[in-house]
Length: 51
Image 1 (cartoon, rainbow, N blue to C red):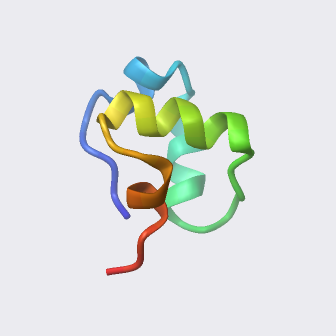
Image 2 (tube, rainbow, N blue to C red):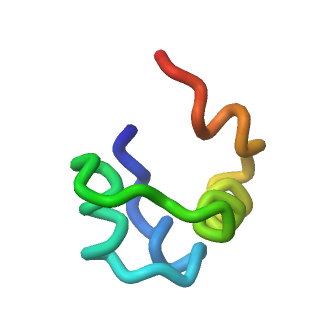
């Protein structure tokens, strides 16, 4: 799932880390999932939902 621009800033995560998540080179921690879901304004369930 590609993240929209500015997500790393709102989530307080480095853009390289976000890139590694997008490329499935890293697995996010629960804390990271919370940060990302808050930054995107969605629930963790929605964030993890497969398309």
